Length: 324
Image 1 (cartoon, rainbow, N blue to C red):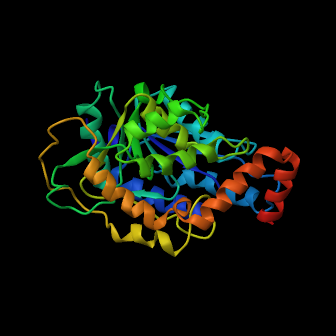
Image 2: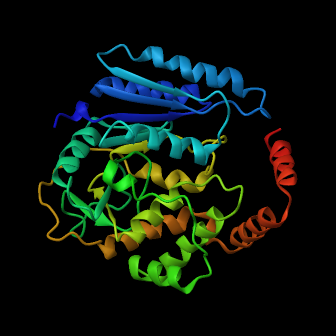
Image 3: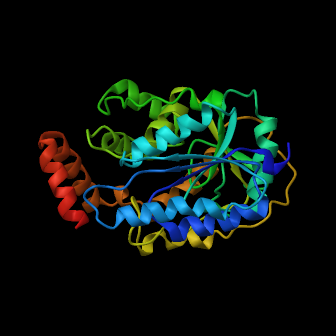
């Protein structure tokens, strides 16, 4: 498969400067089929209308030979529903896809890597995702072209329709022994299992905008794995003040994993998670994730608990004030 034959889904909202950079990157590979999904403006944010319109107009940048499909929402669905809806949309028409949110800038190598692995693992049901990110250094342990992981980064990724069909919106009870047993058996350590359980707790809140936790749960429930390239292939440029989930100096560490070209042709000997490399990846997570710091963790539990007991209109009012 040629690298530019993979259908690409671009998910945008109100950051035209990022969409412009992403489309400039896509122009180098010139994908033949592009899906462009843009969520509608928030009624509580006066600036959104103009910014969303500007993002939609960025579609005019696509001047190469390309079938472009557009999903421009008139109303704001929010992050969770807009992303899930966009991925559902592309897989109504395609069997494979690359998914790029507006702050994920891919390299040319990313597309060729995805093309190769989408074909190689087409019928390997346990392999459910191809990541564009690698946040462990090249070493004797990380000497193959890629490794299999239980930790799935989503800053530029690819998957199959067969895998996305396993996605479930429902979040299980975080206090159930069955869930914790599954997490402990799936992840490389109890510490990682407890870390992810906190995300399940946050995702269970009625007003949660999280979707990626549910996708990870789909991998866990099906003993699925992610392919992680030996070298980082996608840059995340979204660590800015208006980022939805993350910003701040702590995330500067991800900038130290520069994008490059994978030189190794050696493949892993078995389709099993590399627990040693997963623990290395988790060490970076521990340095950046607020959920792993005691004080923010307490605040996270209090915030999630408040969302569960406060009336919806109260939560909505708090968010409006925060946005203002």
